[in-house]
Amino acid sequence: DIQMTQSPSTLSASVGDRISITCRASQSISTWLAWYQQKPGKAPKILIYKASTLASGVPSRFSGSGSGTEFTLSISSLQPEDFATYYCHQYDSHSPSLTFGGGTKVDVK
Amino acid sequence: QVQLQESGPGLVKFSETLSLTCAVSGHSISSGYYWGWVRQPPNKGLEWIGNIYHNGLPYYNPSLERRVTISVDTSRNQVSLKLNSVTATDTAVYYCVRSARQSDWVDNWGQGTLVTASS
Image 1: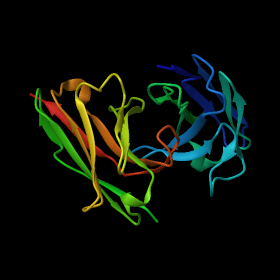
Image 2: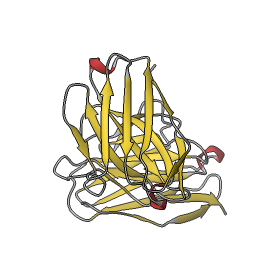
Image 3: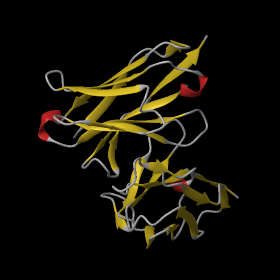
């Protein structure tokens, strides 16, 4: 299986901050990577797919970058509704299984 | 707009079989897409279980393959999950999910249902 490692596991920030979350794959996955946001008691919601394509309805303050083994999710100006947990997800068809990162919780500083 | 709704027992005894159903509305399963399951143990991360096309073979996470069965019932527009020989580590919220291709990001999630494995 391809292992996905997210860092940091927790990020403390304030409204208006620019933040970045990193996801590293144990082998190259090209740009077959998605990012999701999950709030407590809710299902995850897609933010970005194919490493950098913004999903429909997602605010432009979210952006994704990277290819191969290193990827980044950035939020340009953190809003109150952005405090949540974020997961990366590799979906490379060469992998026997789809796998998720361990998650990054963004909380109030 | 497609909606996915999971249902099934919230409590399963150790060594027995977990059975869940996902009712799909707003989209005919026979029209396409892959339908599957993702689970999340309490306060932990996400784990892909597997998925299936309406007229194709299922794909499973190798770590669960010996115990899991995913199937579709096109007449009822439902997707089912069976996981046998459950242990405490199978306690999780189980999400029904949709993807455009077998290996793809998830574009729709059900609300999830908590299943607790207990003696």
